[in-house]
Image 1 (cartoon, rainbow, N blue to C red):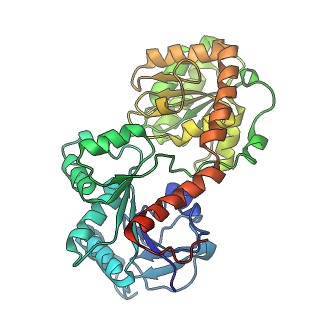
Image 2 (image 1 turned 45 degrees about the vertical axis):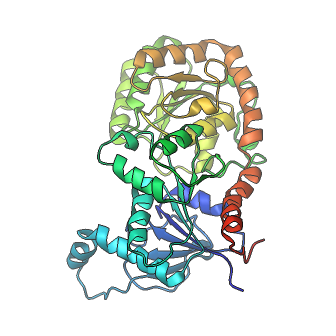
Image 3 (image 1 turned 90 degrees about the vertical axis):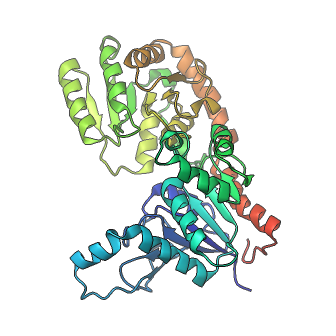
Length: 405
């Protein structure tokens, strides 16, 4: 008997995709990953035990972690200019048809789209073109897929098409369950839990600074400034708190270029030391800095469960988080963290001042958040939940979980 075959449609170069696959990579299932965006052979190096599809060359060599490449044959003699014109200018139709053909050829038992704006739309179009019955289809909501994009005229009809067509829906926030139903979701809602895969709670204590959190003298700021990120608001608020920052160091990670420039000017204007972590810092390095931080700040106009918020919870740093993520499902405002509007530096300033002034608040929050992490963020608990969604689908659809361990 062949193992149960699962086709994942997702961003192939994303750490989030790699972390999801890591939770099911050892089940003995036949996993296939089709990139939701045609990016050639750009796959995240932590993806393992999967068949990886790409568009450039037919290759049968192994990738890292026991994965295998499968691609479309494109003769090397075709120039890069021609290839870009054929494959990139006509990406939508070409890539949709490629997915349809892959589904028809490998006949997956389950199709799972991770994220909506690329993977969900692509799978929906391939489904429309596929003759006969389509495999059971799971759609997973990432980040701002509905909360933000559902308010945009270009995306709202497409989101409605995806959610009214899928058989199963998974997400990280109870907030997004209600939103999905308002967009016509008829499929079954699967258990709500983080997509990150949780944390090795036996490992992370070694990255925490010893002693009370109130004794830490680092402030950590997520450096995204783009369509959603508002790191500049956080930096402006820190500038307004300069009278309390003597002895502190401000550390930024994932800093975009404009934030890096603003951080240098902040250092010059305030005299407060500022350090920017390298762009490709490891996850362990980011965790270590949360473990050194008294306060971890994350600001965006939209998110689901911000990974940086979960990292702060695990590492004991006091979270100051924008209220536009579903952080209120994880922390209690004023007790285990502080929630603020994303575009209000005055409110952000008030939150930071409180986090810097009230030692009892941050120390008590760390104790409570440690318990939350043990209950809700243990990788040993979340990985079986991830595998469980496929077993649920298989049981309801009469699919034998061949290869199950």
